[in-house]
Length: 128
Image (cartoon, one colour):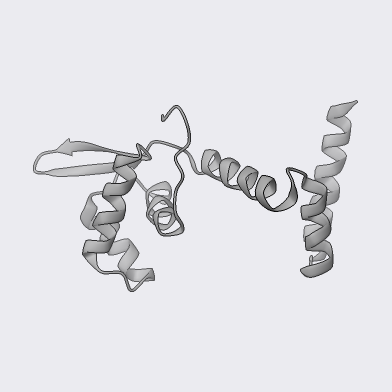
């Protein structure tokens, strides 16, 4: 596990998603999975994989003549960092303005609203 969560670009996050979904994988497996959902060339995908290695976001283990890649951080760790970064940069570090923005600019489904109510109730119970 890296001591700090590396900054991962949008493109790199797609490589990570493949590895979070199923790993360990060879570079050929990663290329095949991403070529199904992107128009990226093999060289681009391998470059992204190498960048993630350099950032210690993934690790490679030798398996005969090939390497097996696996993530060094969980999806949840990355999501936590990304969401905190968004809230800090865009909403001054506060969650309420984020929710206010979504309530006025995005369509929240009844299910979304119910989930938010349940979450707020759980937070309220925990705070008591």
